[in-house]
Image (tube, rainbow, N blue to C red; front, top):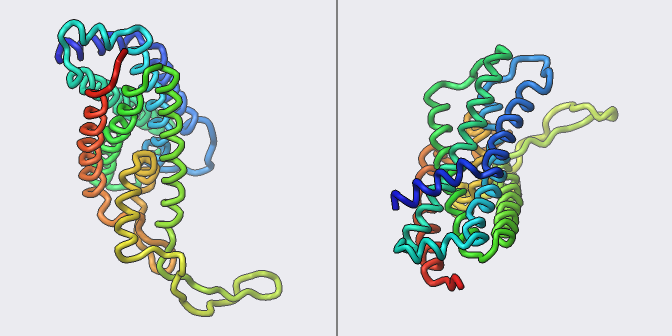
Length: 285
């Protein structure tokens, strides 16, 4: 397997989509930090963690192209004919995809950090919290790779793998957005009174929010949400500000710094097992 990893790494270094994605990550960070005069000094962590879901989507597509080239040039059949097992091939591609995901995320965050320092911005969040968010981001990147590889490696052509990856990313984005809006609903709402000019004139009391998800349904919704790597990456952009304030908002996920890494790791194990099971029985003719 070490020979496969070495060969794939050298192939990655010559892969144009990979470097194009890297350049995009850098330019996207530069644009977000340097492209606008905000009129105040925003915190650097807003830029570092606020757009990672975009990077995961892009890297997922470039990973699908990278894996799809194996079918385009017949490399998988050649590897099998030289004695490599399907298990080694699958785990090698998973390792490469995971590395691409982490690389894209780290390049984006490092560029945002440097640009933020150049503009004189600082951090508003404690260092320990930022480290926890960073760890969550890395585990989320691994989960995204575990989602992409089963689709990309079990389809016969580069185009079909790319389309499948794009559809999966789109589905995860839409599902995550819907869950986010549901989980963001506060448990209670304040009913405000307004005068004839439309100005708030007082409060009429506190009422139970009928759209709030509670009890066992909330636990299930939280688990589904953090198992969605695109949704989790979006949430990590504001996780350090996710505080429960009475009548205003509720936590999206309870104890996210523990749940996200654990659930992401479990997701990697399960999806890798399923993907490997299918790949071992796939007809490569």
